[in-house]
Length: 598
Image (cartoon, rainbow, N blue to C red; front, side, top):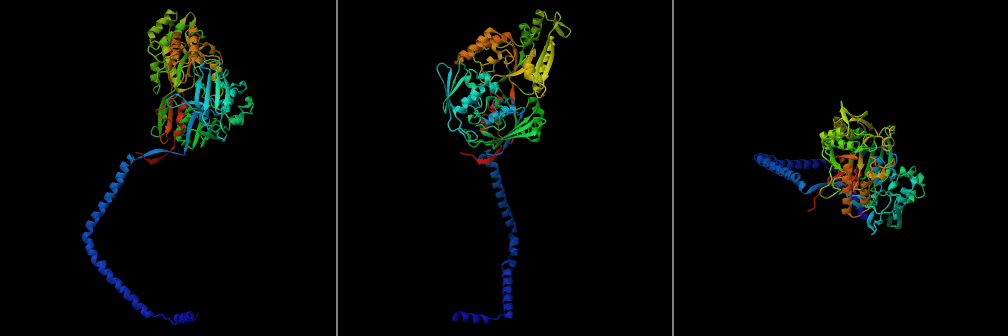
């Protein structure tokens, strides 16, 4: 304590000498000035003498830095590449209204495409156009060819987290079969019995051998735990049709009404992170429904959507090629001029033969804005194999005229007549820029022959018109310009067998021939590919001789997508336009730069 008091007393005695402090500051200032003169001012001359060397050295260093940067930019492509990144929204424009999200009732392109993204099926078609297991892990058929056993892959979940089992598959088929459900798929399943053996095994028993049956296993599977207690007659109106639960790569998020007047709706979906096939790169998928192709073109121009599959070749001229990629893909369908063989004029086989001779299908294809494959038979090119496949006679207008002359149809002015009857035909089709172009060329060729051609073009977007009820079902036409979906299997029984005549059938030609019926029935009742091929060749020869229709061309899907997205694989082969989703998991909107692996 004494030491502390002593130290404090000494501190109190300290005094500040300002004169002494001033002398010390002046001394430090002088020393600083002397050092500045010695080490800086006196050496400026030396700096000036070497400045050229310094500048040259700095320029060389700068040049080296620029060269290294340029080399990095120039050669980075050799060790870096662009890869898909997760995230982003993909918006696809499609035709037709969205009145239901239940796949049992999907009819428009927008509805069917949405169901493909929301729901899974036992099988689907891969990028090569072949049947591929989706929910199915394996399938076997018994020796009799009527019992199919399908094993399901494990770990499949519904979007609500419940497990998908064989009971869901059996429930869906029985729901389709129930007439109270009112599903258009019922006709394919009426005589098929389905049984869930256990949670992972389902069996289908057919009344007879049906070679194309595996292709029928592409239906969407519905959840029994949600719809099991709903009456079949109330399924369509159930809330499930507006807010579905599926097991596909995307789950339902929202059904947005954009424009009530034009029935504009948008289905919002999000990637299902527990999807058994893997998580899609795209985080969100939107299906935009439009009522016309003109509206779709406008949506592409404004950037409202990323892509579309519902556009004709003639509309692609309006697409900005610098912003969009356009891919053309044939699908397994055929566009035909179908003759109503019960028509007063066309019931005469000779007239049908004359019309075929007067039809130059190559000129029709050339008139279309985009190339399309030829189609001579009731099958897709390549579905029949072997040498000497039957082919229709080449076009010959002079021979066609002689044939009509011989049958008594003589030319008077610009139209042929037989007695008091005029050679007049009504051709019906749907409003479509491509069909209308085909009809223009086809009618021109027939008019040169002396045929009076009247047209009935139905706008299917008009709510007051019903093409199915007013034209197809009553067969209200002489000639129908129409597309027939053929599929992956050459079974065309539904279109040309006499049992399919009638308002509910698809034999739009009212075609009847015993030999053709036998060939079609025999072909679908055999599992051996070689024997089926022989039967279908026999049918094709009879079909060509009877001329119930003229094959015009195989249609193509024009897929337009923004250049900044990765979507449809250019090497894909499509059975239908909806099979573009076979590689949906790899579609992407976002991109990132990554290093290449050696």
